[in-house]
Length: 316
Image (cartoon, rainbow, N blue to C red; front, side):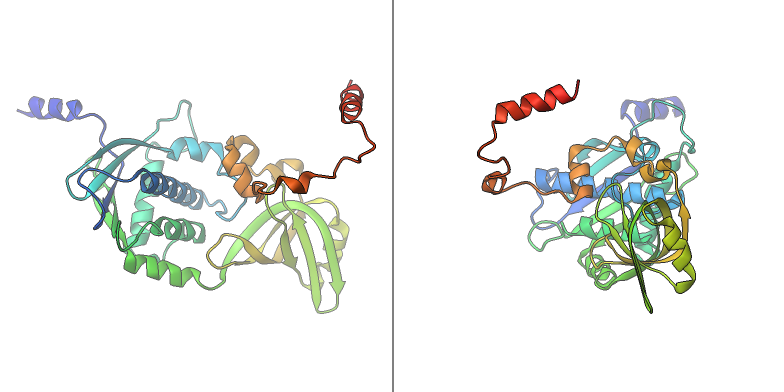
């Protein structure tokens, strides 16, 4: 009998590491609209990646994608859509193709941490995870989806099944937590491009490799150090004020500033193999909607063909 039971489990295929049950007045049995499916999958993946960063004690406020090792260990694969009511999405973790410095259950642990945060009324969320859960909750609407339940099934006989749901009430609670500027320890690396040494108003700017610059303040005790590091690569750590409803650092008060090598500027993002969409979002690049703004950049008396020829010749 035990052998029959074991065989039936194998025939059912892989057991999911995560289930998302999507319910609401506009949901049909075993179906889900593609736009909502894409958004739910994307936001769930982003939240898990940020939670993984928090578990590895990495900063979750940064431009660009997460590092490649976390992507490989925590990337989800949708393995099934089923259920009469509600519709259930089954996910498994994509298995890495090489040895990684994580335990086998690291992705599972990140998922369970998110569920634990939801069960604690979102108070325990890392700030970066908090924002991703809020953006996921935006699919909650009166006419379509009213509830998304996160479920981590028991997979190895030791970890029990746990679950928690995102509802309208949770969305309102997340919105309240994000409605005012938030404080967080922030660490950035970039070029110290500008500094103002006015008494009682010491300020500087860090130009990041990807994304917008970060405005910083510092105490007089750091003035000599800032002056010495002007126009150099630096790593800065301090108390950051995060803009409401975003992960943009409004201002960073410097507690530590040190000279940094070029490798610090990559912050693993160079090796993260970001998509074009991720690079555009991180760099805040928007599509051109008015082609006329490109007009006039080449003087009328210039020959375009000659200009292109000159460019190619200068590269030889």
